[in-house]
Length: 166
Image (cartoon, rainbow, N blue to C red; front, side):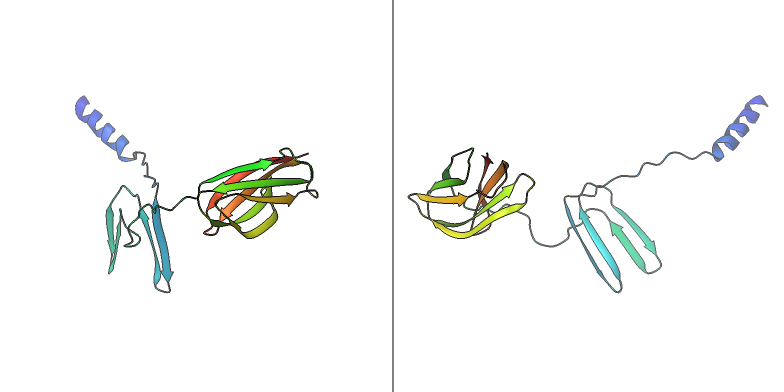
């Protein structure tokens, strides 16, 4: 009788208890979202759980989905090899940049302050294989640290060179 009462009490006590549920989180590497007047659709690559839910005429399947049919790959781009010399560093009123590259390329030059604000921009200079030299007037800059960024015509960064103005 005691055993039956104990089983009955344990059954009643555990009937009101619910186990803790931990939901999975997704760390996605890719995906996409689209929507129109009928609804929206989002897809994620990287989900580890696949589940299907139905409600009336609607069917929802979630799990490993590809957002498009385009394969992912690494594009091999030709890197411009550049030797550089920036002088004087620290500078007073001007800095001179000397470049020497393996081949000809066109470049743009940008000078940023330490906060990332663009202070000077000079576009599309032809840099040849022998030697290229350009002087930048920095007399209006305040004392501090700056970055000279050289970018080729395709928009790829060639070099970022830090310098200091006294």
